[in-house]
Structures are given as structure tokens and as C-alpha cells.
Length: 306
Image 1 (cartoon, rainbow, N blue to C red):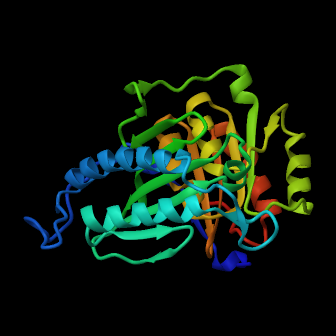
Image 2: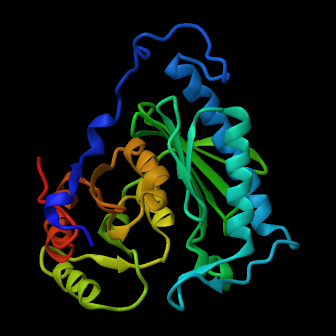
């Protein structure tokens, strides 16, 4: 575990609505085929993300794709053949269409790129759900520019729908076999009462128990633990509520952060070594939930900075 002195606070909420004026000192096209106009690269990445997420749905639901999980670590940390198949497909697509872009995947890791662009992929977030036939499994695809998530796509494997968003647009698009349409985020009393809890481990421990106990104090909340951070973030983006995550990885949340932010939700993210912790929801949610993250993840997070 990383100590507080080694952790860095990120606040990505301020990135919404920013504009790009290009990268200094670059003109024309690079030999690797990437465009120096960041908006043009984002245009291409936005379309690619939908195409690739749709392909991931097909690969995951193909009858010939084995969904039987095998252990990676503890009994509930599993990987399926579909995880590797989807990640290898996405890695090959990025290498072909965006040479020079970095790629980080859950299963096979990644290396740094040369252009300030990085794709972060979880081929199947919620693998246990996928392997056992539960809803809540997704493919999560994000594209970062200079460390900031600018494209996010989440494929809901149970519903067969791909959701995508681009930073600064305030728009979420949803596509299925019938086409693509804009999805307007909603808020209702029931939706606002939900708090999704996601932890980077499965076994019940004092952090989980303490977090749940702390949630009973500020106000009435309905707790949901779906076993997939990307799925939880997607639901907060579409239907409101909040999400609290401790001990996750960046590939669990990068795409969901873009969708939540473009839906008007607030985002606070902490980084501690290879782990990330976050709170997503309304401004009041952040005020109430951030101290809980800092208390129960105290050995892994730094104090929040406004």
C-alpha cells in the first residue's frame, strides 16, 4: 500500500468544457499517421471507441467465446478467455489506427506512448458477473490526452448497448442494433438516494464494514454493490445518485469518469501508486463522501484539496 505522502490528489471535474488550441511546436502530420490537431484526433477516437466497444460486445456474447473464469489471484479474482480476446483485439486496433498512442490494459499492461495520447481499457469490468451470468459486466474504453480523459465508451454486455461521451460536449450517446441516439441524464428522488460502493477486493473486511456504517450517518441512502465500477459510474451518469470507490484501478473508472462528467455529475479522484479512489455524484455527495474515502482509505490516500 502507498502511504499518504506518496499519493496525489486529482480533481477532474474542472476539465469539463475546456478547449484545445493545439500542441505547441507541431504542424502538419507525423509520420506515424496521427494528426497534430487534438480535436481531429478526438473526432477519430470518438468514432473508434463506438466501433471497438460494439465489437467487444460481439466478442463477449459470441457462443464460441468461453466465459468460464479461472483464478488470477484470490478465489474471486478471475479472468476468462474473453478478457484476453477483447484486450488483444483493442490493442491491435489502437496500434493500427493510432500509431504512437500508448495502451494500458488490465490483462497485459502497457507502455508509454510518444504523442501524449493513451488508451486505457478494461476488456471486461465485472468479470465475475460476466462469468456467472449477472448484469453489471461492461467493456470500458477511455482515451486520455496529456493525462486527462477526453473520450469514454462503456459497453453494457447484458443490455447490448454502447454508451459514449466526449469531454466538453455535455452529451451521452447510446447505440444498439437500431442505431444511435442521445441520452438525457435524469434525476429522481429514488435515483439520487442510491450510492454505489465499489472496492478493489472481494472479501469482506473492516474497510467495507466501516464504509457502510459511515454512510448511515449523513442522510438516508440506498446502498448498491454491483461488482463493476464502470457499470456503477454509467448508472450514476444516466440516473443520478453517487458512487464511492476505494482501491480501484484506473482502467475501472477512466471511461466512466468521462460519461459522469458530461452528465453533469461532479468527480473527485485520488491516486495512490497504482490504486485510485473516487467519489462521483452531486456537489453535496462529494462533500459528504470524500471524508469517508479519506478515513477508510487513510493508508492509501492523501487529504483532499479543494
